[in-house]
Length: 235
Image: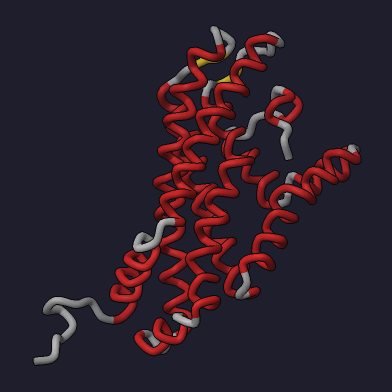
């Protein structure tokens, strides 16, 4: 007896979302990416806060440590979202996905939405953990206010969600993990590093309009880049 949508299965776009969620967490890679993101957050936020304490930087919001860690943690999200797309092309299972949901844009949108939700929850969770780790490591060189701290947690989560959506788009365009990762590493790390390394207000302004430059400004709630500790300038 066939199963009809609404009686045991989901159809349409909701079904595509449920399918992508199941596929994402049916393999080991996403769990490893999230675990790596958590480990990077703990190590980097402690390092950031310790550097700020040792060098006696000006008092800053404790959430800046978590915002700074996003420069590295975002690559755990990039790998997770890349694998969610390119693994189907490498195995050929994308044909089954398109047979079950012939509208390609629905499959793409479902993957982007699932990746964004996972990245938002993970990013916000990492930000909470990072803030908790950084607070004692700052040794009094940080301030804590509930409102701004909560906004920074949400901002970090939103930034990671946007990185996930960007990654899904690039992965669908390249259909190959090496190609997608090359483009994203260049855009999110290599190019900003070159621009900031060369120096000058024009190149710094250009960097502020790239994904991580603008995202970093957003996660710091509009803080002046010149007031950031040296440890934060990883990109």
